[in-house]
Amino acid sequence: MTRELVTADLADAWPERFESLPPVRTPRAFKGQRNFAGSWWFATTRTHVAFESWLERDHLMLLDFAPEVVAVAAQPFTAMLPMSSGPGRHTPDFFVRAVDGTGVVIDVRPDERAVKDAEVFDATAAACAQVGWGYQRLGDIAPTLNANVRWLSGYRHPRCRTKDVADALLGAVTKSEQTVGTLARLVGDPVVVLPCLFHLLWSGELDAALRTRRLRMNSPVRRARP
Image (cartoon, rainbow, N blue to C red; front, side, top):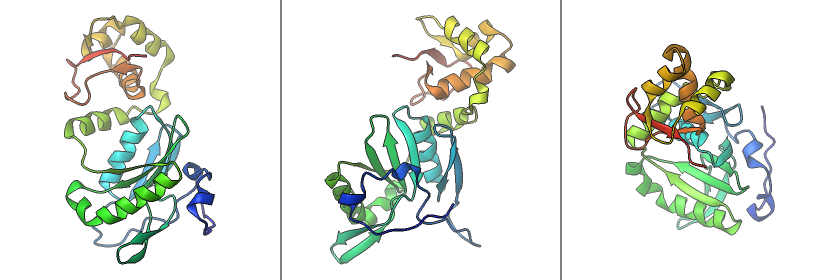
């Protein structure tokens, strides 16, 4: 999809639905490049979103997993920012639309590389604040959370949520914690049940300690809190 580029003040352009627009640039692939570009199938909107590095892909995955996120667009716009050396151009990595309707602009940069771009991030945050958007610079991800969500992302497609199995799983969960393996065996053949169980963990209908423990068959699982 091509995109007609226009120039406008952010104060005038902020109502635009940036989460629905294609990127202002297309990630390039060339011999010897150090980063890896591609696209992530974003289950929340059932569309593909571009990324330009493995870290961007992993943060897209976490945004897809986050219940407060309803849409994401890559490289949503290029901003002219006031810098100490003069006006500078910057294209943020993502624009996020939250469930409450607010917008959040995101830059992804490994923590060890963030310092050299701090002025760009600060200027972007200031511009966003002027129009009521949030701003985040996302960096390194906790390994346990990253590994767990990456596993669950393999079951993010709606086809993994078989209604009868999902209803049985949700009905079998008691107020006390049960392990993944025990719950699966209560409902039926684990080979059939586990894909749906993992999808329920992905969708937030079931809950586990994904930030602190690697997800295994003996991991405690419970109904998600309302």
